Length: 598
Image 1 (tube, helix red, strand yellow):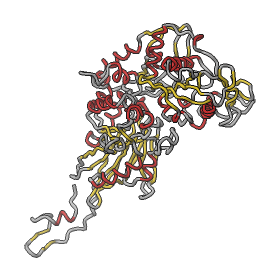
Image 2 (image 1 turned 45 degrees about the horizontal axis):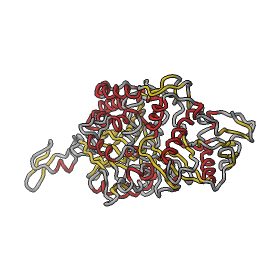
Image 3 (image 1 turned 60 degrees about the vertical axis):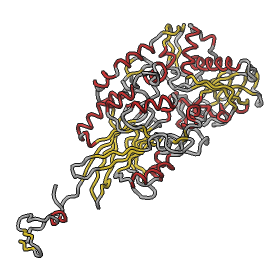
Image 4 (image 1 turned 180 degrees about the vertical axis):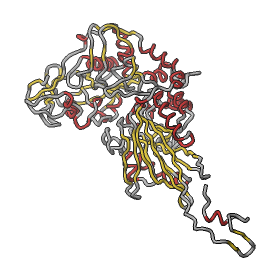
């Protein structure tokens, strides 16, 4: 390392050609003019994943085969491990960090099995496969996602205990003390060849919507204030503690929007707002939105500096790579440049070490999901469910309505008509003709939602359905109907379109949003706006998810703690044979000026 002039003259002995140091005077031959030494520089890389949702292997437990989609993406930590190894080989292990932005322990039958079937919370219980894989790969920190709370706080705490890295949540606070319930941040020291370590702080932020979506698990125990407020509190502290670089791992999308309306005073997708409003942040690993953002730069409104955001695609399909360039200036490390890109998991093979490590767990789950629980005389599919009333969605709704009706027997609400809502969560779910397995039934409901019963009036149900019908693109009579463009209007995902079972109605897609529901009737008669109905509804929707009107504030008359998925599995087991004539009907259809679209 070249010496700068100050360090050169500070020596107490004769140094350098032609220089002699005596007590008071220096006689020297004038040295040749020296070039100014180059500043000290250091580069390092931070890798990031998000929304892994229980994916270790490139495997789809609902189809019982290797995962594949139209874009031929691959999924899972075994693939991520190979990408991580390549980056570490390039940069040097000590010059890298690996972090995650949440939603880790829910989403596949692998993660479900070790939360419910062979739970990690049992005495002498197993180590969660996601903890095993992430420990083996060498994660340095992970933010909490909202789905971390789906199985309850005891499962989350056990998972936290099994991880060799901290779970971060600066805005997950104890409801009584308002102190962090999890570590707010982690501090990492990177050894540089320049003799000056770089301190990298990772601040974890999670989603305020947890207070709504998992109310049953967190109410009275934890509260979740906004991301901007907590970032503004912690980032200056991290800088004062000596952090040269501050990275935020945020389980919050970048769009600045909310999908649950005004149920909380906080924005759900606030990552870009954090970058814009809170000075002192260098980069943000974004999660939650299940979108791919290689690099997104947001200018901080106070400093004018760019903050680099990146969101890798869900399930381990992508790995974000942040590359940092630092320069030593005025006695400290300063971030000179940050860039981000994503690496594609389908370009590499699975890491054989991870495959071997969790082979037994994988085989147990494959055997579990392939248990036969019933038969069906016909095949049922969700392929056309986004635009047709299909028997397979009626099956979900029938099970939910029947379950609620039985639960309300003997109660003051037993005489009220029971309706049900359901969404098409996957366009590839199917019940085959012949034997039905657990994975077939579970594939209808991939989320860990539970069932509730809420009381709504006929007028409220009409508004509920009008809101749902915004899902369709307005299409004039006579205009060609392209199913590829008909649905998901305004970015509405499939899981936020509800069909209501027990009513009959038309959706006139030629009309503007808010004026589409016609012929709304119950039991052959027009629905009375003042009539009262019980709606069987999942806890996500009942808690405000999707911002549907009325339901979040409606009277709750019953709630279940078991997942709807399990309710469906148990119902199929009890029936033995699924006869669509017992539950299927055409309750709704798309029309234009009274003429059916299909």
